[in-house]
Amino acid sequence: MSCGSLLSCGLYMAMPTLFTALTDPDKKAEFAGDDSIVQRQCGSDNDVLNGIVAVDATFLWSRVLPVGLAFATSLICSNVAYEYASVPFLQMVKQSNVIIVFFLSLLAGLEQ
Image 1 (tube, one colour):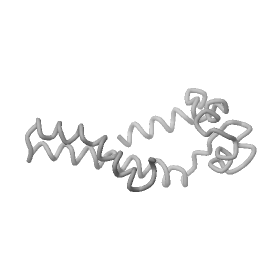
Image 2 (cartoon, rainbow, N blue to C red; image 1 turned 60 degrees about the vertical axis):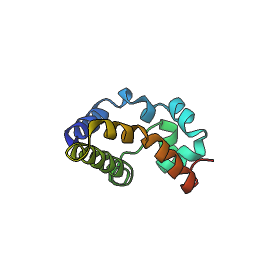
Image 3 (cartoon, one colour; image 1 turned 180 degrees about the horizontal axis):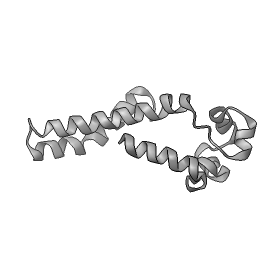
Image 4 (cartoon, rainbow, N blue to C red; image 1 turned 90 degrees about the horizontal axis):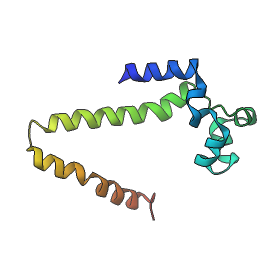
């Protein structure tokens, strides 16, 4: 997983045009809705006008690393679960994950 992340970062540095969601201002406008949100995320007007998202150490530590750790933990826990539970039960639990996430987002106020 870390090898894939390193290769992706290297590819982004070598050919940023391949990552249109990070470099194309029109794509950012679709995701963000307006330029003020993009400006707060990027930090300066020049970054917004150039259409480049600043990928620095702070962005990696605050946005990328937590998602990667959560995904790795999910993979490890799901593989360990096969030692203790039956396959049909685990499939049922994994399919109910969508419902659990929806209810937790309702409790957290992320969904209405």
